Length: 219
Image: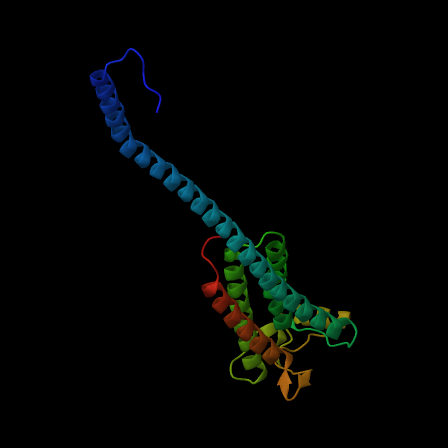
């Protein structure tokens, strides 16, 4: 230890006491500030991890939702492609109810394209509604084919659709052939196309509703 020259021992002891007191008094404050800094750093790190996980979660769910909507788009394109093939290649002309049953599938195609471009949860809900409408139209047409209830007067057996003799004469002159809604022209395993439409639409609608309920609420 180097001896301080010109300083009395009493003064040296007082200086040592003051320095030790000041050191002991600043130590708790520095420790608190250090803890606060560490806590802030840990909070920022945790917040960054949480934000990153949220971004990854929404990215994964958006990808899954896009795939789901793409699947419904493919299904709708397959259904419309099949009925157009039946009409223009196989020669099965659609009736009035058949044409009406196509519109919900057109809606599903439009919503599917929109969902693939920008996947959102409400699009899946609208697809479920359109498929339920399609299922209802299919059940109605199948009931008309089975004569459970009457179909439209313009395409039901025994009705020409003409409201007067002049309209009937004009239809005969144009040789217009009305496709009957209660006549089954296509069957597979004993089921008509309207029955298959009702079954496929009902299954697809149930799947869309289930996926909608399990999908995240935030778009």
